[in-house]
Image (cartoon, rainbow, N blue to C red; front, top):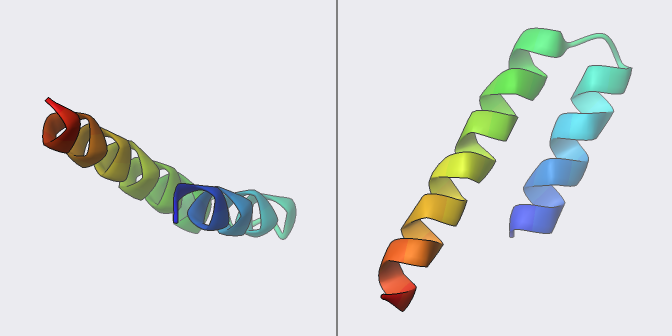
Length: 40
């Protein structure tokens, strides 16, 4: 899921949709934090 979301964020960035790309990157960070919290 993280990889797919990152790929989407990169594509949005390439298309010039910087705001949307940054929001996707924030979502990836949230997913990573949740994943780390679940592993503890």
